[in-house]
Image (cartoon, rainbow, N blue to C red):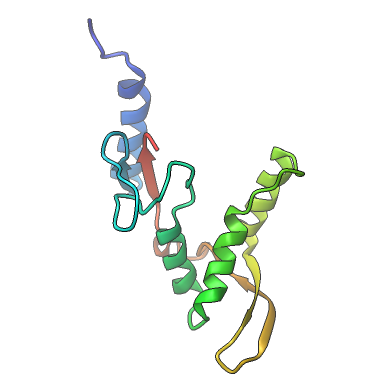
Length: 139
């Protein structure tokens, strides 16, 4: 039986090659290679985690330096927050706005002052090379 017309061959491998070779993205294969926990392939603790905490926190710190860790943690939590009362369309729009416009957070700075609605940048839209692009096969 020939597999030359398989989904993996026609779609997945073609996409991975495009992301990796033409766009310069990092790529990983999670299928049968992923373990969970600290130091695992993707740093996930379970299959439900699709927003990769380690990478997101790293970029939040890079794009918004010198803030307390609580500010970055709050931003990440807002990004992954779920809702049972909003439609999927509403949630998608909300997450898109956070990614595009930044995530507003409240925190206490090192002087003990409460900072309200500080917007943390998630992506660098001016210098694309500053972002971390990762395509994961079989997440």
